[in-house]
Amino acid sequence: MDSQPFLAKTFPPLLVLRSPSVPPFFFFKSQLQAHFHLLDPLDSSEPTHSFLSRHAPSVLALLCVGATPISSETLSLLPSLKLVVASSAGFDHIDLQECRRRGITVTTAGQAFSEDVADFAVGLLIDVLRRMSAGDRYVRSGSWVTKGEYPLGAKLSGKRIGIVGLGRIGSEVAKRLVAFGCSIAYCSRKEKPLVPYAYHSTVDELAKKSDALILCSSLTKETHHMIDHGVMEALGKEGVIVNVGRGGLVDEKELVKFLVQGQIGGAGLDVYEDEPLVPQELFAMENVVLAPHASVYTPESSTALQELVIGNLKAFFSNEPLLSAAQLE
Image (cartoon, rainbow, N blue to C red; front, side, top):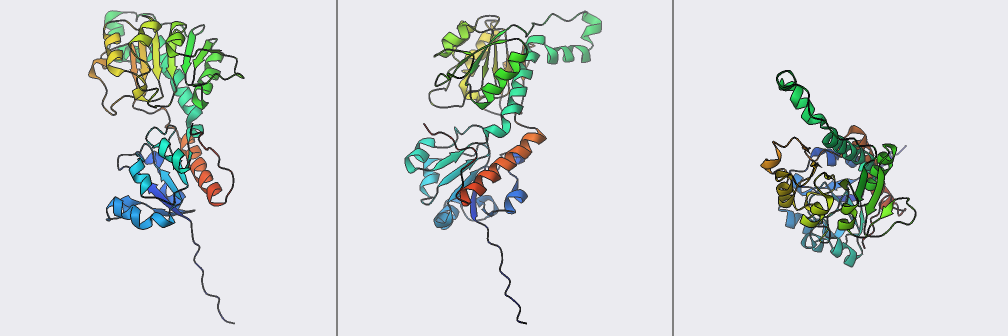
């Protein structure tokens, strides 16, 4: 009997763009290789521009790893591109205007992270109000023995919480804080008629009616520095700002000034304007809790991210509905 020739299984090509500094959490190479033929400029000695030009005709889908920038210049090298799959919750690093113009679909990974980020946001708020991290330092330093009882913190229950950006993450934050007996209001691009929370069309108005603001918004030209002097002033001396969105949402210099002068109650920050650099003035402040942009990092979210990214790519190459297509308004 004649032996049948061996037919190697062919995988669809997938362009991978990733900065060397992107955490491994966002790039699961072996899992991707089980389904796709990876085209990764970092695995080649060829200059990136030349690499992209050479593979351009075959590239229909691009995986953007973490916050790797995808500029209009990069997109111009990929005339056949139809899909950009982001492995991050936000996509301010992707030229959405050019994608919209070209008819390129973009998927986001926000749903893989929303519960974990919401947990973290609530944790930051509780930490700032109840001074848990500061209390931990107080005990470890021996100050409880030498200085006596630690100063009182503030109660969470009953607080008026303003959520900036009531998307997936903001909605999960609201759900958790309702369970704490907080009253919820929000500010988003559009009012959401099906939610039971009070809507404010501006962040200033929301701040006036809130004891704390939790920032869950994406970063755009419109939202850059939306938390400015006026908003902080409206929030008041007892107000708290928690940011799990993007560092650029807050005028960081103004925030430092308000905290130094005691014009705001405290802050819980997971994101910063110039990461990983953090304003040194914040380091000694007991009413500020700092985290290293870690709200998305759990084993569970890692698994969910892999399933979502691979699921979107499989759906695309099978001509089936995508799992998390973004609305490019």
